[in-house]
Amino acid sequence: MTSSAYDVAALAARQEISDVIHRYCHAIDRRRWWLMETVFHEDATYKFTAIEGGWRHFVAEARRLVDPLAVTHHQVSNILVALDGDVAHTETYLTAYHLVPADYPTDLAFPGTGQAYEVVTGGRYVDRFERRNGVWKIAHRTGLFDWRRDQPLADGGLSEAPADWRGQHGDLDPFRSVAARWRSPAAAEA
Image 1 (cartoon, rainbow, N blue to C red):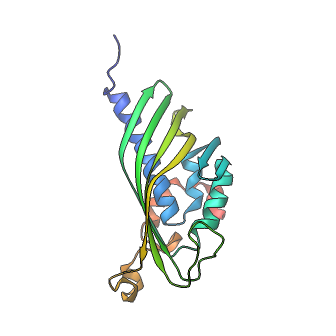
Image 2: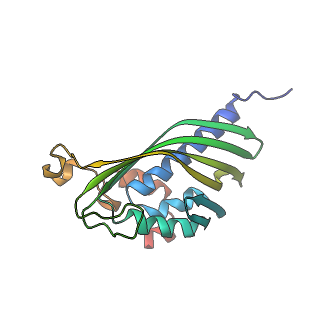
Image 3: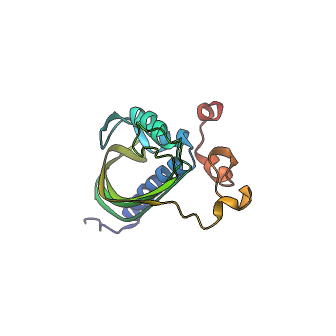
């Protein structure tokens, strides 16, 4: 008897894979870089634009590009999963918002212009997941851009709202109690 692509084990695998993809977005947007250890296998590789190599190299480069941004907001959808035993190939649609401050470094992905502006991009993550020791994580990720739009900043007054009305980075954000579920003792010391 062959198992259906939608039997209980397959549905559980799809959900775990989706959780990993969502956790990746959260890690970037809230600057919880330690969560990346729960997303990538230790020997995982990554290719996105000119950034290529091991996932730790990617995170170091992403921090250099993302940390100076005022806000990022990654949303994913259309997560397609092709399961094959302990391997899964996925394609995930991505829409990402970036608020570039006026003083963002001029030599990085979103060059500073002296005035704040917004960048909205659309793309895809094409991943190879592997289940090792019962845990699904990314073994290889290729990031692709499909479109990009730069526009003048129009925050609608949100920048004037009290800080506790807005999302925060790191442990200042209220989500910290949920994120703590994935925090290893080693990460807690970081």
